[in-house]
Amino acid sequence: MEYNLADLFESVVDVVPDREALVYIDHPGTGAERRLTFSELDAAANRIGHHLIDSGIRPGEHVGLHLYNGIEYLQTALGCLKARVVPVNVNYRYVEDELVYLYRDADLVGLVFDAEFTERVAAALPRADTVRHLLRVGAPGPEAPSLTAVDFADAEASGSPERGFPARSADDQFIIYTGGTTGMPKGVMWRQEDLFFSGLGGGAPTGEPVKTPEELAERVAVGGDGITFFPTPPLMHGTSTLTAFIGFNFGQRVVLHRKFVPEEVLRTIEREKVTSMSLVGDAMLRPLIDALGGPLKGTDCSSLYSVSSSGAVMSDTVREQFQALVPNVMLLNNFGSSESGFNGTATADSGPERGFRIRVNSRTQVVDPATYEPVPVGVPGRIAQRGHVPLGYYNDMRKTAETFFEKDGERWVLLGDMATVDEEGVVTVLGRGSQCINTGGEKVYPEEVEQALKAHPDVYDALVAGVPDAKWGNHVAAVVQLRAGAALLSLEDIQSHCRARLAGYKIPRQLVVTDTIQRSPSGKADYRWARSVAVAASQRP
Image (tube, rainbow, N blue to C red; front, side, top):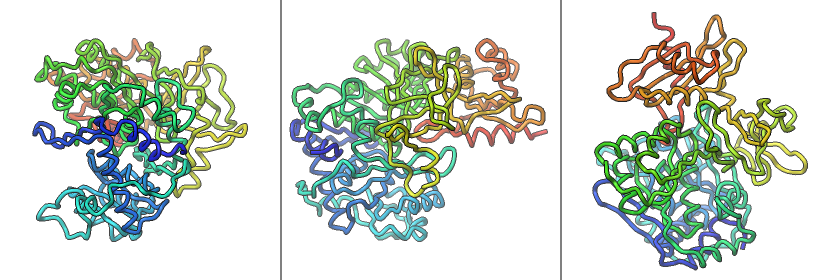
């Protein structure tokens, strides 16, 4: 047995076959749900894996998952892994041209899609001629264009529920396409063994990684149940899929909603006794606070042990508000990426005054991007990770050469995040280098200013961007969404609030108040949108 994700999943199934593995709530509030045990999920994945093989898809070929959250998503991902087919996540928000780019860049030969996306898929396929097999989940509407696709239910019925797959390898791949918030999306190529240790914590994200593949099932066999994982962001973003796999590796239950509906999330926490929930920053935590302090007041969230965020920070103010409503919960700001997996968790003293501080794992360093040598204390560098790192970017040799390097006989990945390190080895994350604002020769990282802005009691959400400025080169612009019922803030109000928390050059020189802050479906910042809004506002007479 090797560190192959399908092999590891099957080993867990064999020791807890009758334990509940997956609960899916289709349309929150309707009561429609499905529940699968580990053996039932295993058989369902086998059916799809065999269907893909029977349809002529071969090991190493790529199949896109263009789906909302659902059993079909994880079932297909597992089925691909069982058949040694590479699953590729597809952002369901993409429109025709973006889909054409991804379908072609990823060399998809198969596509599993929700019927709701039929029109977009039909428009994109004529320009993506590598796709030769389609699986449709659900029935298309009467106005949907004609598209030759196998119904997912028929594919399940045709595939064998038994295993019987060829031997798999730790070298089998898993590709995670990044969101493309700073450019076109890129496919991060992981060997499954590397992803198991970097992205899934080696079977024990909070403890000692397993030393052999067989040890994973041995741990599950002697452990109990009672943990329920609830990844609330879309599975199309790598973090949620990896959270589900972490749950399976523990032999524990995973709960899914089709979409994020705050009131239904809270009802599910109470009903299913959720213990561990993952989300993405304030964009998801704030609506939960509003619901728990309003229409869902009194909902029993006492089972909730931890709430973790990655991809965006839960700000101090918002964390304190949630902690007041759910006193016993642990709130964790995790740091990681599609290229590195998990790097560390924010320290208790992180905040607007001290920054986003993390104690990184032993494989993570802050290095000079020119020499790859560790930076001195207090000197900005880029975060890098060694050891279990991806193979590179699919179909992008130039970007791979810029991002991955070898040093001291080990492979490293150079992340886009700038940081400093202190005398104790604690890393302060400054932000993405690509988003850094150069104003009058000083560097300003948007996340630091956003943290200060969100500490204002009338600010609901905020993004910060650089706007061209004749005097300073660029100036710092704050795009702010106010709390419902809050009085309109002036630029002077914001500057006065920030002055106690930030150096003078970091204080916003422009304020744009907007009805809603635009983010990705997972809650990640859309800095291109923020900059365009700020630039447009600066050009108005």
